[in-house]
Length: 241
Image (cartoon, rainbow, N blue to C red; front, side):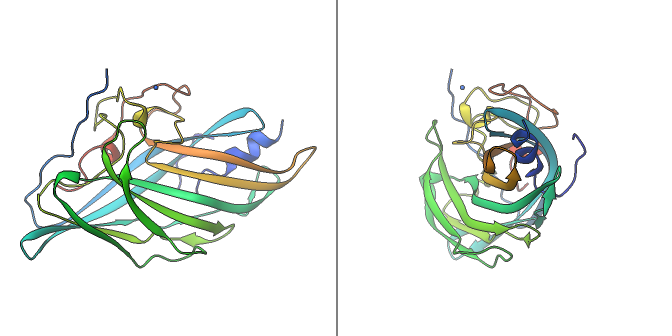
């Protein structure tokens, strides 16, 4: 169960079915033109039929920093991942309402766009909003549905802004090597964690089809207590140096 792999942690839904001093921290400045790839471990928690389950996996993102006229361009691409077709003897139907939350420098924001992406159904969107509950400026990418067995790549997020403040995943005031005290960095906080989705399986005795809201934190801890604030890893740090 603690094995790290590139499969999405939909298995935790099947396992379940068988039976919050707030200080805002901005991303660091980065004047370097070029790309930085960051890979890290994430721990995920999902709840179905009142039972909480956990799983770990790897995650990765590349940020390409370029000039855009008098402004700065930061393009973030995300590693492809594969949704399994079965988990613990149950049939996986897929994922829905996939969210990826990227914190930006809202004070110099100009625009954002999505490009590319594959392996999912529906139209992916990106909305400039604020993180829950702290209110940091973020872009929330939403992917409607991913079928079981699909390998999907989220679309690339490009943000144009005036400053060289690089993006980071939304973890509140938590950073690489430190724990947050804000709920965006709280384990199991679906409304604010940087990565969240619903996973669904069918054929569960008594319950039939079960959906588990699931969310993930960038941490090497396997596994924190739900509502704990674990020490975070490189995935909570600046994504471009």
